[in-house]
Image (cartoon, rainbow, N blue to C red; front, side):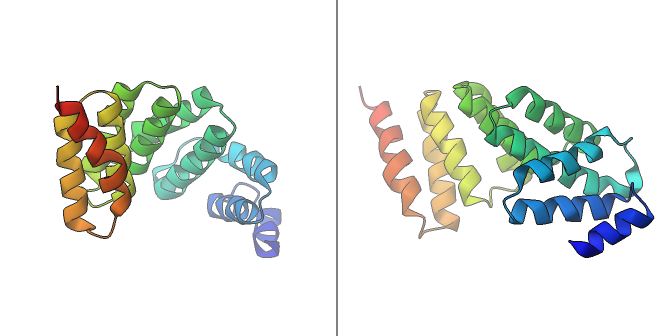
Length: 174
């Protein structure tokens, strides 16, 4: 943390140092300090040279806003991230969690489906969330497909079998 502060004393707008300092604050459970540091990142003009750092900063601040139930601010940051990188699976996943918390399960399923596609179906947590939202949106066949794909890659992921697969199969029965 001292190193980041020393770098910022020399050059106060150095994005990697601001992001490192914010990450250190998050690890220290100083959410307010992290949020204040990340607000500086959000106010900076976008620079393609630091694209990855901007993306990480936007998404970290969006996660903080989601925890505080400030969904509109988090959504704006995710959309800004997607404006520069449409293939950011984590931004789609964050948008899905926002929609899920707003009980818009069809929209959440669409967002998680984009994240699932961008991660090539290789993320068990995204597969679980996608299947869960498919069940909530009454798209049982798709939920069963995602459960099987996830269990093929992660056979020791019993939570999806117990929670989602049974509900989806039960929803198909009259």
